[in-house]
Amino acid sequence: MKPAQKRATVYFDPQIHKALRLKAAETDSSVSEIVNDAVRVALAEDAEDLAAIEARRNEPDLDFEEVVRDMKRRGRL
Image (cartoon, rainbow, N blue to C red):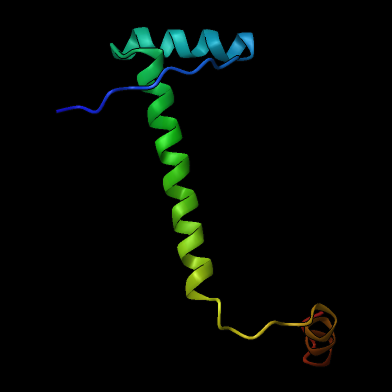
């Protein structure tokens, strides 16, 4: 059973709204379905980023200036 959907008012740039309506018509979808899918993808990417940050939480911090000095010493810059 599909959970109840929540209604929200979203204001789009007119060109984006036009593109969404055209895409909806071409894909036999609704604007809501397209927006939901896009938000779902964005949230999944955020979750991946947060997981990567958590996995690297215990790595030592690098000092930018020291990294640049080291690269110069090794002839990389």
